[in-house]
Each structure stands twice: as C-alpha cells, then as structure tokens.
Length: 225
Image (tube, rainbow, N blue to C red; front, side):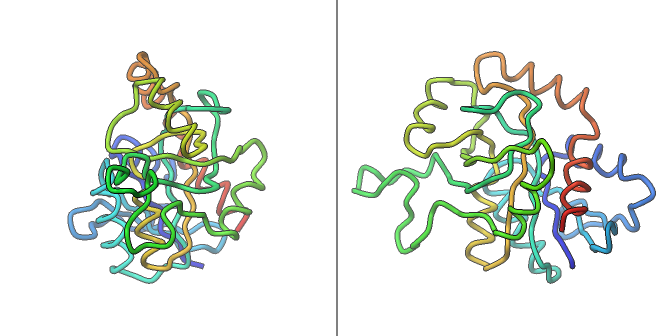
C-alpha cells in the first residue's frame, strides 16, 4: 500500500524526518513543498510538508495527490485540547470540521457549505480502525480554524456547536480536500497545549522537547495497517 503523510509545520516535519533516520530513501520537493520517501512494514510512504493553515493544507493536499496515486492520506501534527484530552495525549479523528466557516447570517448551519452534502468530514474506516487499535491512542472530533486558539471560551463554544475534542489549523481543510478528491483520510494529532492564554508557551515547549512525536505516531499506525 502507498500512503501520503501530510505534516504542516517545518518544525514538525524536520524532526520526523531526522528521527526516521535510515528509513528515509529520498529527499526532494513536490512543487514548493519539502518531501521525502520511506518504506515501513511493506508500505511505501511519501511525507510532505505543506505549510501552516487551511489554504496551505488544501493546496498542499491537492498538489501532492496530483503528483502520485496514494491508497490513503495520514495527517499528523500538534493540536490544542478542548475537551476530554490533555497535553501529551494522541487523538485519532472521528471527524474533522472547519469551525470558522460561517454562513449563518444567510441561513446556513455553522460550518455548512452550499452545494456540498457533507461538511463534517468522517474519516476512513480502515485508517481510523488501524489508528484506534494503537494502545493509548484516544479518539474524538477535530475542529479547525485559521488561527492559533488561545481563547478558552471560544473553544468551549466550538465544543458546544461541533462536539470537538481538539483544535488545529489544518485537519478540517485536509478532510475537505480528501473528501472532494475521494481519497481515504485520517488525522492523528498530539496535544501540545490547552488552547488557553498560556498555550503558546506550552506549544513551544512541546515542539522543542518532543522531537520524535510524529515519527512514533506514523510508524505505530503503519504497523497496524
């Protein structure tokens, strides 16, 4: 099987590449995006760093999926806790949604997109089941917005509307791209902070101290697939 591993931040991507060590077979670029290939558990994988935020996420996924054919897409990265998860937890996405997509003034539901039947993106069963079978991994709904969430009240508002457990800046857009392109998708995120007024410091500390976080996540999932 062939999988596309999507990582937003270069500070998440480079430690992942380094910690995979001799598994890395080739380094190159897909358009403007750093990429590398590796093989593990008989799965051929391409990891791509697409950049932070929803526009970069959707564009990066589309460019990478146009570059080659993949059996599935796995996203990983840091997220802020909203409900039921804590710093250090790893959460597998039941679904992903763009919390900040808002056409409610013209009668739409929060997150709802005109002409699109689904706007809460359910993750692929096979990828989801494999990830959830990893000991210690939790699961829940992921919310996305084009900002670093530091407002606890806003996070609780999104929990009330969308029942999210964690918040990030990419998973909803990646879910949208994979939904429209009909490619199996799952997001597995590690909790770096509590999405409150001290979350920036917590996030920075996580990035510096937990350099094998995403290589560990990816390898554990590939072992289950």
